[in-house]
Length: 82
Image (tube, rainbow, N blue to C red; front, side, top):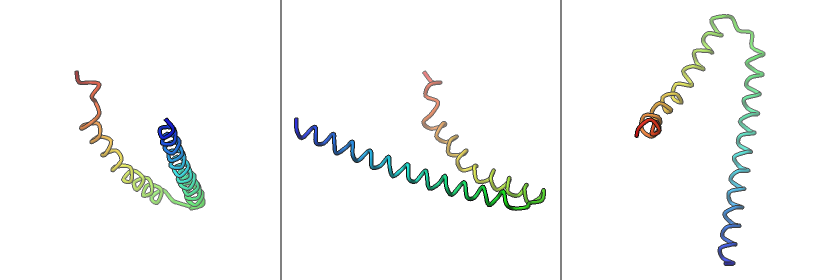
């Protein structure tokens, strides 16, 4: 029983450490996004440059969209099949 309690405690501590690391990473990414947004807001862009940035943002999301379609095709949609 003592070894089971020890193993559960060590696992809980490991999960807590991993969660804390993930939260630090999220905070770091959030700070970088905030900085990037402030820099973009400071740019004085004309219509063509703004269109180019919007196109780059759209192209940047394509791999994520494609991956989600693949995940749905291969693993998802199981609720629709019976």
